Image 1: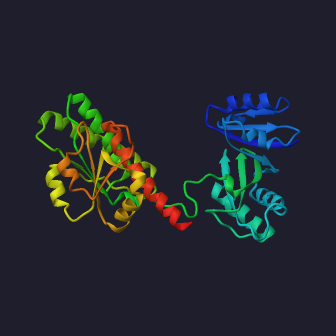
Image 2: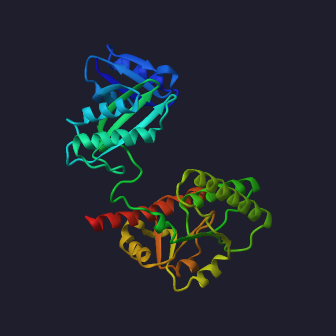
Image 3: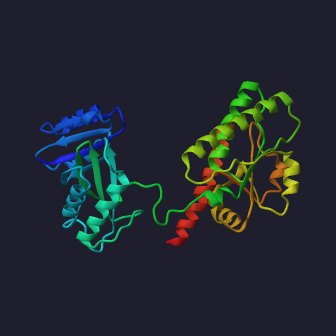
Length: 349
C-alpha cells in the first residue's frame, strides 16, 4: 500500500490528518508517529499526491518509494535502487536527510553515503544548491522513508539570477523630520522607525528637524529609535549567516544636511512630486551612478518648499494618500527598491 510522508507545522498534525480524511476517506493517517511532532504518515491504496498538495496545513509531502532499515548500507542501497529509474545521467541531484531518534551516524553521514551510492548507480552529478532531483530520506527511529522529488519543489530563498538588494540599500541615506508630540507617542514612533531602519540596513539614518523642537519630545523619539535599531539588530545577528552592521544614526538640521550634501543626488518624497512610476528611468539612473543617494522624508510635516527646490528628484509613491510617519520610511524604501529592481530585471530580458 502506498505511503505518503507528510510534514506540517508542529501542533497541526491532527488538523492535517483530519483534513486528509475528509478528502480521502479511505486513507489511514498516523499523526505524530512515535511521538514526533510535525509528521503524518498516510497510507492509501491510491496515488493521492496531488490531492495532498492542495491541503494548506501540509507544508511538504512526498510519496515514499522505499522503506529501509536504518543501517547506513541499507539506506544507501535503497536510495540507489529507486534512483536508477528516476534520475537520468544528465540530471543533477542532492540528498536531504532528516534524522529522528538515536543512531551512530549523523544526517550528513547519510547524505554522503546515499549520495555516493546514487551517483554510482546513475552517473548523475551532485548539485547541492540547485539540483534537478532531490532524494529525500526521513529517518524515524528504526525506519528510513525514502522518496524523490523534482528540485523545483524545494522553495529556496535564493535561486540563479535572483538579484540582491543589500548593495542598493547601503547606498541610501535617509534624512527624516523627527516625530514630536506626546512622549509615549514619540517613543513608540521612534521604536517602529528604528526597527524599519535596521531591517533595511540603510547606509545611515539622519534625524533632521526643520525647526526647534522640545528636548523631552526629541529625547523620547531618539530613545525609541535606538531601542528599535538595537532590538532588530539582535534578531538579525541571530538569524543571518552573514555579518550584520548597525545602521549609523545621526542628528542634523535638515537645511544644513541639504547644504552639506550639495553635489550629491537628493530625492525628496512629497505628495507634490511625480508618481514614482513616471520617473523610474531617472530614479534608476541616479541610484545606478551614485555612491550615496540622499532621500528626504517628512513626518507630521512635509518637506518644506525651499528644500524641495534643491532636490534632484521629487517623488510621490502613493498618489492621493498621505503616509503616516511610521509607515512612510518602509513604504518609500520598498517603492524605490522595487522600481530599481524592475529596471534591472527588464534590462536582462
